[in-house]
Length: 55
Image (cartoon, rainbow, N blue to C red; front, side, top):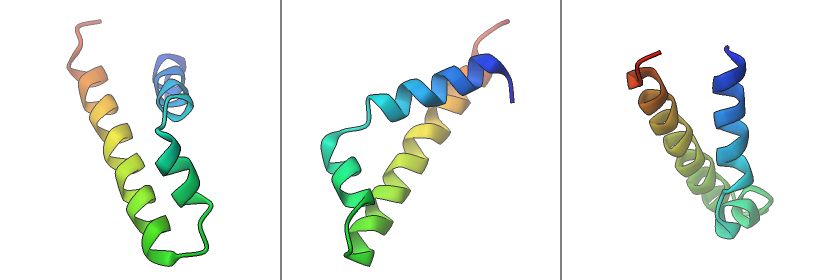
């Protein structure tokens, strides 16, 4: 993974909404799953956009 991609993922995690952060730490399995899936979609979208950019 490139340094640019790592920086992009880090930026996404830093800007993650508070509800995702809270739900990732939740004891409720459904809340954790929802947060994990949401964060995964956000990261996947950023990776897709990154790969579409000309170098």
